[in-house]
Image 1 (cartoon, helix red, strand yellow):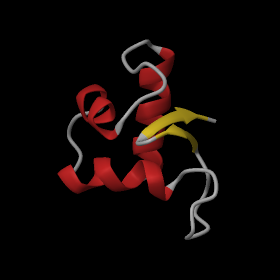
Image 2: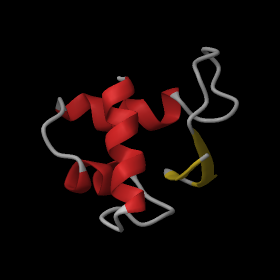
Image 3: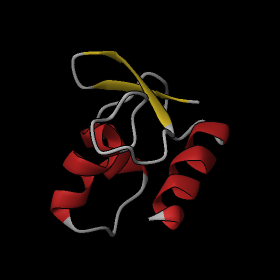
Image 4: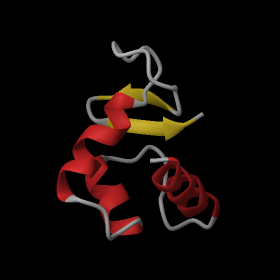
Length: 68
């Protein structure tokens, strides 16, 4: 999953993905991942996630995220 995080950060840097973004935005900017991945990756790696996973994103609205 480190690769997907890198793809997201790169897409933001290159202007292919504008913040704040949704899972659908990530799917368009970073294609090729399993469909379920897009809907689970962002909340799983948000600040304050219940699983204690590495925080890579900040949730700024309902299903809206920004990179840390």
